[in-house]
Picture (cartoon, protein in one colour):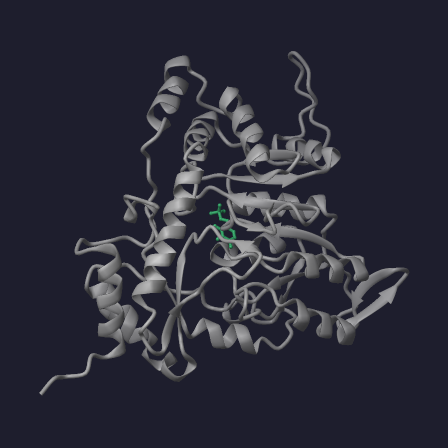
Length: 392
Ligand SMILES: *Cc1c(COP(=O)(O)O)cnc(C)c1O
């Protein structure tokens, strides 16, 4: 008698149809452009460290690609977000709204400013911050004092909102900007995962006051490790550069530093790698978007699991491909993870909710039923751009 395939067998089979028979990683960088030439040039010329032409060029190229007026590159995304929050005026004892469903760095950056994360729920349609849920919550929890929004339960100022564009799928930024504006709260975007993702043609990270990008080894474009702050505000950009480069006043030889600041510089070596990677962004995007279509097709007749696709009006970079299991089969997620990984297909669950981590368990939070539900049902699939050799 023919045995019916289990869900985990079916999913393993469909992933194999798309990625072939080899062992595959979740996300591997692809170095097929000028990486070697640019990095070699740094070594040949001795310009490997904290100044050099590739730092300037990478900042210029990032501004061009995102449409932001300014980009300041930094040592990693987490430090970039910390500084971006400081630029927005976030300080000790402020609260910052962040999604409960995010990578731990979003919350850590808030804490590094001396502020407190305040968790918000997720929108199942975007996988990002739910603007309708936040609007209702604000109506109940915000108290305006002297024109400033405070959490009426803790008495603390709500200084910023940090939307995070999960796996490259954009948050509904126009609606969020309207809500934030109404409450006089700054918006700083965690665009770590969304280089190349657009909303009505406009790049994620250019809606808020400023944004952070990450170039960690697993991101769509990598510098080995690194990040950037992007903004349209020239004063903020200047201040970002100052704060991330030890607050040294420019001078031919004198060492005069005018405030306590950071060494969050991106070395020229890393920027060189970034310049070469950024030249290939269009190809990476094409490959990832094609991979999404191939997965979507492979899963189209699978009941109880479907690929998460971009919302109308948005253009996602599909950084990590996202399979969502139906609620009725959420209890099979671990079997899916076990079987796919045993078969050499690297898959991963989404992050544990930040509200469940020991250091963030006691932070203020709204009810997060959607985040809680989604966290049980997401499986990220192999997503490297090189899995598509012949993007359409
Ligand atoms: C990658 C990432 C960051 C920053 O990571 P770094 O490794 O510090 O560059 C922050 N937030 C999210 C959501 C990320 O995915």
